[in-house]
Length: 153
Image 1: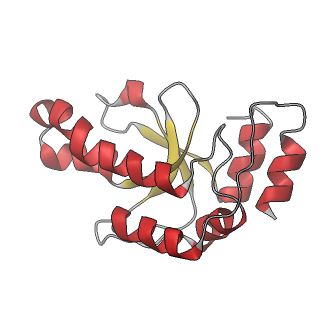
Image 2: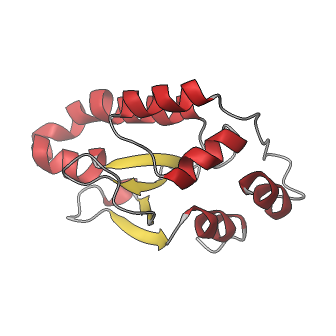
């Protein structure tokens, strides 16, 4: 489903390179590394294709992004915002896509460590100093892919 959707929407974009499916054990390892279960739609995407080298991250890139946010970025922002505020602004997301300009797209993770539905948000790095540096862009993954590849977000 996702593979076909992206192939259709990205025709003519030579930069999009749909990758082979992610192995189930790699999806599980990514969930364990991130610390929460991925929404079913995200797991389905990874099972069909492990990123597209354009917008959608592979399971490995998702894990690396979370690690970078938790280990590297935290030290730069913790002093300014405090740890809890930083975690609220950055760490409460599972980012699975990027726009190439430093902004990421992902699901919001609740305080209990579970993903809050299928709403996809953009996290805008330029807005990190604002109380809310994210906003809703799509109600689910299919809508996000369609909007992104149609240049609507």
